[in-house]
Structure formats: structure tokens, C-alpha cells
Length: 76
Picture 1 (cartoon, rainbow, N blue to C red):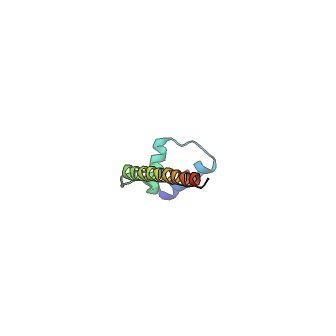
Picture 2 (cartoon, rainbow, N blue to C red; picture 1 turned 90 degrees about the horizontal axis):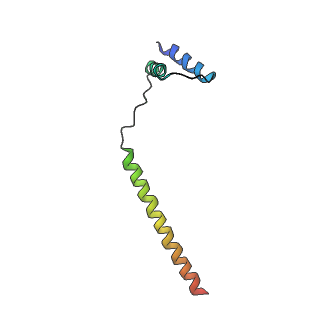
Picture 3 (cartoon, rainbow, N blue to C red; picture 1 turned 180 degrees about the vertical axis):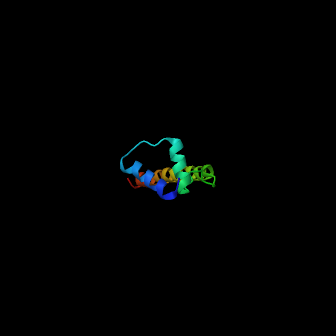
């Protein structure tokens, strides 16, 4: 399948909201030189880092809230 044919076929599917089978979609993507492989980077490391940052910020918020509550109680 040529590039222009694949592009037209895919556009037709989008325009008419048609269901496209996986094998046909693979052929279209190959013709259009589109890759749907997993990213090279390790996303698990990024997720772990972000979860750690969220946890750290939650603890910091709790600490600051307790501190402000204690200071408020001292004023009263």
C-alpha cells in the first residue's frame, strides 16, 4: 500500500467513524511509517519519583498544618 493510499484510507475511517481491524491498522501504520512501540525510557522510575515527591509534599503539608494549628492555639 502506498503512502497516499494509506493516508486516504485512514482519513476515511476517521471521517466516517468506522471500525478498523487491528491487522488493517497495522498495515496502514506501516505504510505511513508510524510506530506505536513503547517509549525507550523507563517510565517506572519516573512514576516512582513522582509518587515519592507527592508523598513528601503531603508530609510537608501535614507538618505545616500542625505547626500553624499549634501557633493559632497559642494565640487564643
